Image (cartoon, rainbow, N blue to C red):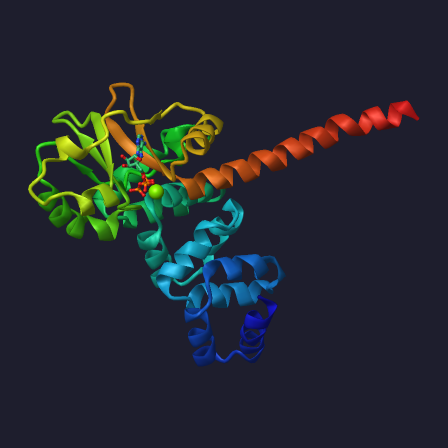
Length: 274
Ligand code: ATP
Ligand code: MG
């Protein structure tokens, strides 16, 4: 990894914008995040400005809240706009909450610049507890009705895919939006095009509620081996999905907390036993 990134460091030193753009187009966001803390502040800023917007958003989404707030204050307005557009709604809501704490005025202005639909969805998401399924989920799921045929669903997917967090699972809802079933993209592709969704869906859906604790969400996903879990409200209405990437972040945080807690407990013991 060092080998692939040293040309990047060199281009950053030289301030060679053309070369930087080209290198950044070929660099995976994760590789940038791995060296992020070693980059000079000024260079991070350059990277976030020159990265293609989708990758900039990917890097940005994984930065600590205070750093996100800082960039939303300092990056060029066009880049801030692109970031806000590219972020998935759960990450967007988290970033805006981070700004809210540091600079409520800026948070208000950023929210006002969102299109009304996005703004409403973000407002909705920020109402949930951060450590519960509601605070982890995004409303960018794909849902269909059980009376639709496989070919109708595939046609619908073509339109819905660009804005969906994932299209590998398609959720089936009734007229009130209540979660009734699930099918995978594979189920869909292998079925006869005239088949009704009702015939191929799995009606025994494993789900979380908006107030399900994040550890429980992680456990459900691990036990059932799901990469995505649907989230319903108190009426059983599908309101979002939690994806495994967000759950992995949770597990990492909690492991760190546990280690700190253990350290805090163990140290006095050691001191006393001497
Ligand atoms: P397989 O693993 O059998 O090859 P696949 O690759 O098509 O299937 P998977 O992602 O493994 O798809 O999902 C298998 C099945 O799990 C899907 O058919 C789907 O109905 C079911 N499934 C997905 N999410 C849920 C859920 N939340 N609750 C219950 N079942 C689910
Ligand atoms: Mg599978």
